[in-house]
Length: 185
Image (cartoon, rainbow, N blue to C red; front, side):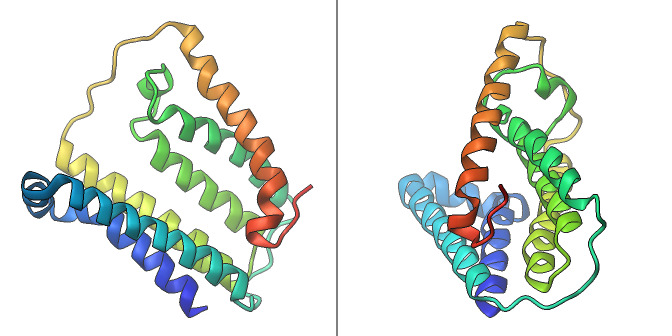
């Protein structure tokens, strides 16, 4: 379980650094942008390796009984989360309604998985990353100030994250057993 905890903490620390220490981040970027981005990427990849390895190695223990409907809600939440996540780097109308689509996607992913899984490793992974996403949203909102909604975009652009989200949903559903050890279909 220690590897999983370290992976979640590393993920959170790396991603919170820009919001918690914007001046230090700007200093690193001004001096050595390529080095900063390389180190950031290595820490993110390292945290993902630790999370997957830690998840697979952890012996889960019972924490709470998930509701009977938890799995169904999780499956629906995952589709919405993947559409939101896909829209994060695109110009879509989704961004007119959701200020932080990717962080909101992580939160939905976390809540959905906590409804479907009541074991210790789920609480650490999904609870930890869900909490991180909320803290990150608060810090970014504080740093950036009032939200100015983007201008409307053609409705056709909203189809792209929808299609990408559905494709990701199918691919991740199929691959889920290979990186978590749990088949969902």
